[in-house]
Length: 139
Image (cartoon, rainbow, N blue to C red; front, side, top):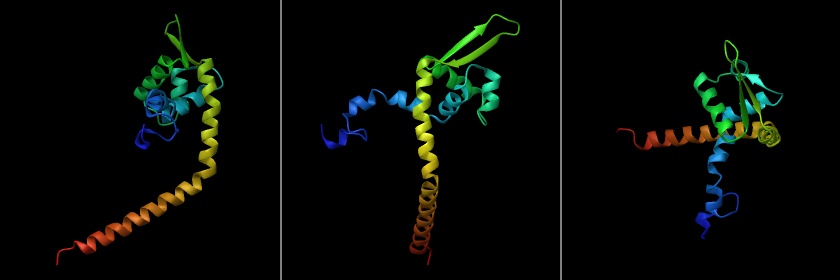
């Protein structure tokens, strides 16, 4: 295949497409936070929601369902009144924690560089807007 069908992995495009949905799942902001929250053991739904700041009930439900579907979280329902449901990482889910820590470490190490790049981008965008306004201002 040509260069246009090779992605950043350096492998055939179709091979990368095969894992796109999985990469989208594990790269999702809420997935990262839920996996981190569950790393020390099972938790009830409301406890997860309290610990994952900013997550809505709908997003937590969708995230947990997706993680369960992909075999990374196990949902255990206890026949009590009211019903008790615990969520826990499976072995597969626990194996995701270490790669996520590596990404976290990278983000911490490069946070100032990214902030500087964002500021430079904003300055350039403002300069371009000023030039555009000057060129196309009514005479």
